[in-house]
Image (cartoon, rainbow, N blue to C red):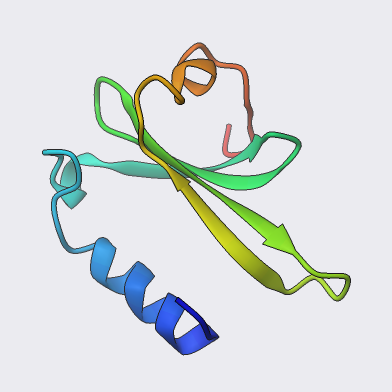
Length: 87
């Protein structure tokens, strides 16, 4: 995806559909520091379901968005490694 409008539209749509069997009303999203940078941590009542992290250019604009939903890759997050900025 390229462009602010396209990315914003995608984020708006994903907030209206079930993800990994979890309904949007059963999800929480919190700001978190992940891999040394800002990110989003998505949780169901019983597990972490995804993270979203960002790459930025020199002017602070987002140049890439990374979504991780593989449970094996989320083990560090599940164990509480990231600092939760929403606490």
